[in-house]
Length: 148
Image (cartoon, rainbow, N blue to C red; front, side, top):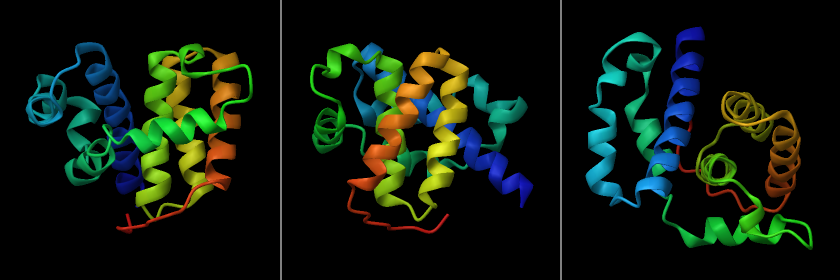
């Protein structure tokens, strides 16, 4: 069971990194996903534990504009997407995809992405992400497709 949990965490971490790469490079999703997964980082160390199917499900909806719209609606007045860093937006999008389309318990999802946030962003941003994820989780319609 521990192995499965670690594999899912690594898959989430990789999904956030992939989302960030797409935002920066503006590459085509289908061209870059296989190239990303075949990179050397996935051949050794903890990244070789990635659950490819789970990873692909998380990143497959990154171009869905409704994600961005849901995040915009959740931001408090006076804030908009330009106030979010690219990394914050990527974390929110991947977490939101998992909340909507996977059967993972919402508190687990929030906790996972808070832990991932600790790798990439500062403490003030982590608190902000936590609050946004909590609000997003209360305003989504789950379309749970797959139990992981």
